[in-house]
Length: 102
Image (cartoon, rainbow, N blue to C red; front, side, top):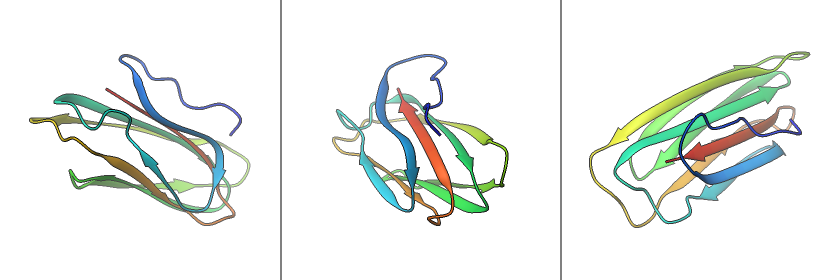
């Protein structure tokens, strides 16, 4: 996972490359109203879970050995929040990369 997923549109507000295990990322500038995009790639045997707080968005991604698994999720936020975080929970056997954008 030497490259982060490419955001199709908007500005990157959080990103991690070649990560493993659990990590929490702060969303720069908080959560703005409108579309919030979360793109994740992973490789290795296991499942990771991505959570966006405080909006309650959460989704799993099954990862496999020898190939890159990817997912893209978008949430339309009705109102802005001053703070936001993206948490990834994953076993250390899984390498992952994430891009979050508005």
